[in-house]
Length: 248
Image 1 (tube, rainbow, N blue to C red):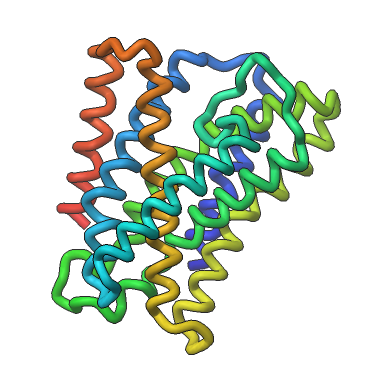
Image 2: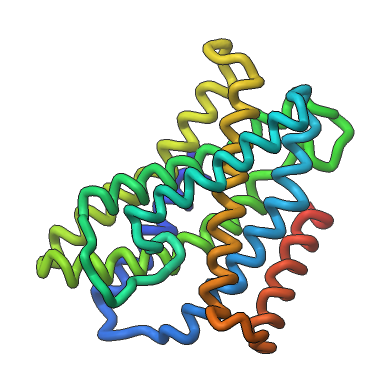
């Protein structure tokens, strides 16, 4: 758990700090990386996280509702973050730094919370979903966080005109996912909350993952024209998720 928390922290801190040493970075390459990460995250949610949730004893219809709630909750958060979690800084400006950080922090907290394996322990012990979920989910979250960290750092520097303040806020934001992981580990291994509440919570997170990943696809093809290069990259991302699911 400690190692995973440290990796989550570094996935935000290192790209953001690296940006302070760089004059610029390739938006085109970041865009391609976003497509790959979005496809991986979407696929891992569909073939691993959601099936795992339906192995619980929770009513399938209710689980579907909770996933929908998570989807639309992330849409509300996006209203305050302006899509920075998708790796984009829109040119229209008008960002409110406090609201931005709160929305992004809550989003990252939810991301980190699903990293725990405790939710799998009481499902089918012989299931392929019952163990080893953290590394493959961690990979998807880290890939998603790198462009988001770059976008956030660029925005903070531009808005605050103070690199030191921007770095401090970035490091505070980087703690959100590790805190989410510690939260779910604590409640997952204690009797404070029944397991069904954790299942509900993770269903909401799964819905947010669906919203994030599908939005990345939409923004990568805003005119609904199939870009074969981006499409090929998304297929590779999906295949990587399938390979991770089969291999681990």
